[in-house]
Length: 203
Image (cartoon, rainbow, N blue to C red; front, side, top):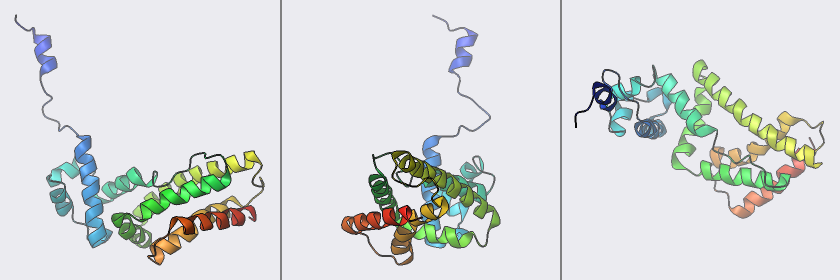
């Protein structure tokens, strides 16, 4: 049975334009983070990133016009999901879940090396700083939802200092694991959650 011209056209693979493959995009993100952890952002080589991902440099430029755009997209692809902001029934349970998932992220060998460099690079690269600022703002919006739930349950004063509360949520864990490079046991994390709850209630 002969196929008509419409069937042939439908079966024909697209030509001319490259097809963006999600699997390769994820591989490029991973390769970028691996390179970044070794060299720091300023010394990241897109040639080496592409080689790590088993691709050519053109695969990067088909997706992003510059290293900056590539880095910003990579940061956003993982940064919003590093912590659990979901409802666990009480502010204590919400804080504990947030700390446990964030601890898991901070224990990752790539994240432990990249996060301090991102903070330092914000002082040197305004465009990267803006992108990281957008991510931080998005994460803080999720933090506001956590506080909203606690206010609705009657656990927090509606007039609390929200910005201070959100700073307190992350500060202790960040200082211990990223600045001091120390481990956090589950028991220490639970004690920190109790302290954070008390501090937020005092805001």
